[in-house]
Amino acid sequence: QVKSSGKGHYQFFSREMNLAIRRRLRLEHSLRKALEHDEFHLVFQPQVSVRQGTVIGMEALLRWRQPHGEIIPPGEFIQLAEETGLILPIDEWVLRRACAQARSWVDAGIRDFRLAVNLSGRQFHRRGLILLVGRILSEIGLEPRYLELEITEGSVMADIDRAVEVLRGLRQMGVRLAVDDFGTGYSSLSYLRRLPIHTLKVDRAFIREIATSTQDAAIVEAIIRLGHSLGLQLVAEGVEQPEQLSVLEDQGCDSVQGYLLSRPLRAADATSLLTSGRMPQTGAR
Ligand code: C2E
Ligand code: MG
Ligand code: MG
Ligand code: MG
Image (tube, rainbow, N blue to C red):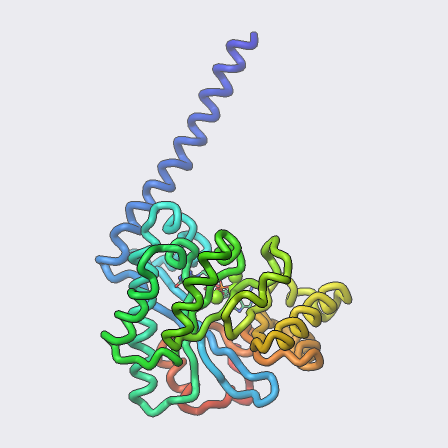
């Protein structure tokens, strides 16, 4: 009896696994082709100053459009890209594209902005990252101060000593640095003062309930205080409601990013927004 049910289980399980593995292989196969077939593009989400209501910068976000038109969000392929190592050429492509975009904004006379680019953990910990960033900046002719690299709290904590070293090197080059998704890691807060960064991005998870949960509001307020006491700029992610914005304003958060202010924009729309400097009165959704 044990044997036959064991066998049944085995077959059921193996069919499930088979499907999952095939799906994964298919995605991996298309992901390998995506770069050479030019299927990636960037969108840009504004970061808005809470006090002035002006656009202080943009975050570049990767989009993958498959040949049949389906757009696959990063949440569905970044991890696979990390696991397969494909993230290295992908992140490099993103960095180059983003820097080229920033350069064209500078050429258009836009000077008061920064462009944030996400780095995967694997990219951040790869050897030669500092050289790579330096090479791309000089190739494209972009002043480093326009570029802000976002590293997640998790990838910093994976190897904090090394992280500090790499961050120092990047900072010396003049690049801005941000810790992304802050608050979701398992880290103690005391390590923060070791990090030579400029910006702390409070994770969306805490912003979601900020207007309804006194606990979440207290956590965000503490993060903002701590960040400010370390001389950092605070950005809140995922702001969707006016009530959330108003709590963040009371708490002294420097800037906000989220659907309330604007969805990620195509390059042309991002350019017009940067040119006008102010958010449209109606608020782009
Ligand atoms: P992230 O860096 O924390 O980026 C913020 C994510 O939140 C983006 O999702 C953005 O579209 C989304 N978002 C912005 N405002 C709101 C809002 O008000 N509500 C909600 N629900 N979501 C909002 P996206 O573009 O799907 O990216 C997801 C994650 O994938 C990013 O999180 C980042 O970790 C990663 N990612 C995106 N682009 C790149 C890239 O070029 N390279 C790497 N390595 N990772 C990337
Ligand atoms: Mg980010
Ligand atoms: Mg984030
Ligand atoms: Mg995130």
